[in-house]
Length: 212
Image 1: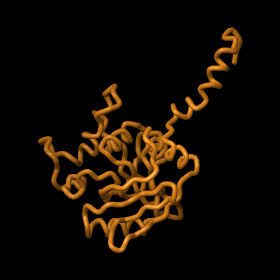
Image 2 (image 1 turned 45 degrees about the vertical axis):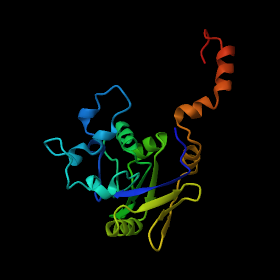
Image 3 (image 1 turned 120 degrees about the vertical axis):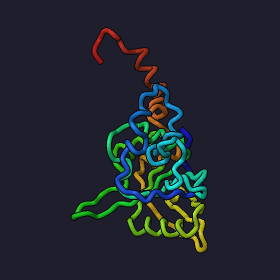
Image 4 (image 1 turned 135 degrees about the vertical axis):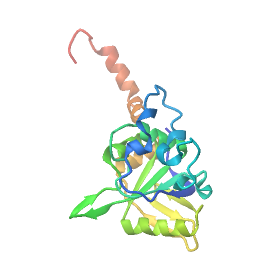
């Protein structure tokens, strides 16, 4: 997995809350036994019309967002089923980071991301950034005024900087373990292989006729 240290890219905005994994990658694309080729089907039902052509009204089809690698959206992104294909589609489209706000609702905190989706992002090298609703509103306002604007993300410093005039800098929190895994580019397999010598030694010494 590619390490995430710093990243600069164009911001694309998706002004929708509660985007579920069936909208991120519809169920008909889950039949593939390969782990590649999902990027072209990201947000398929919104992105394409009935004739199979790009829907010009869909946000990500705007020419200013071409090549975007940072997605800014609304709260509870990635809810629904636990399909990891949703994260594969996001990554294979070209997004390295997703920004979403947490929200207070009836005395409860609605997170920016669904838990399973967020965990799958870490395993695939995608950084999820949760900001306050007012911070995300500000990002939307800046991007709407100047579509195609870039942002710089520094994971070590935990900052997102809009390349505007003046610049806007947003600080974010991130779990220390998640931060370490992303900075070093370690997915679950890489974490296991870090103990390869111990695993090999155990296998050589363990009597397979006895219970572990």
